[in-house]
Length: 319
Image (tube, rainbow, N blue to C red; front, side, top):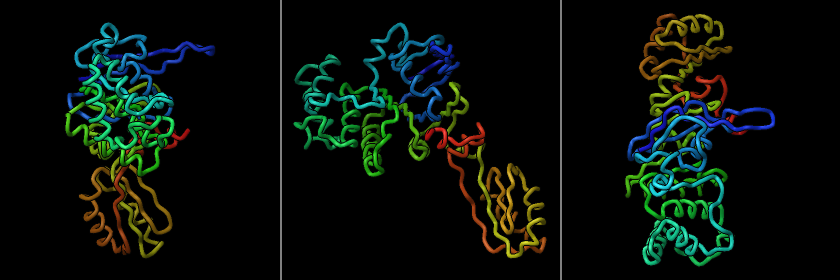
């Protein structure tokens, strides 16, 4: 449904050329929900703006639904919904009117636009607000209206550029419940950029990680965490004088990636903590080392980014 090869975008500034996106190649299948991650300035929004025909690429090629983003932008726009970072509604328009105007812009008849508007208002729980001015809506209500605007013409592809940024946890969960319900009902393809790693981890079938304008990882969340981060086993010892011997045993575990220690604690990162933990405990016991507690910490997507780049994705997003 979405195909790109060597997409690039360079901006000219007073300080010189800035390569915002460099050689982006990706494929998204019909019906997939793909999360596009990276810190501020990584090139995510620029990539989305190229794929949605809002920004011409400097080089490379791309298609959405089989239509070329550079030479057939009108056909691409008929296929997609786009929810950008800013609020899309006019402040002094009424909620229902905003939706009807969007439908008419998508060449729907007046009657069809009104039917579709009422359907989305009910689906996104905005029907009680239909006659209110958009300026009076809360942040969560405005974002649900933005999603409704992007869905007016029932697009097979929906681009969501940080749709829940700035929302409180309840509004964010509510928005995602509606989006996932719509996806289940329609089978649409969703391309999502987000700073919320839990959204990507729990809802996306695939995660792409971007940094400095380049795509540096592309896989399922589970495989990325297993291959690029790994589980961390932490054991607490009864006696501080056994820490050195325990560290030696941990250092020889299979697929050992990182080893940390303090006075009575050993933390070892490896590929499959659940499978290795019993063997680790057995070796410690055989060595006469007494363990008072043990636990496995599962990796996060932030750990994946840290492993790829040496820095935290959360820190980069906050910056």
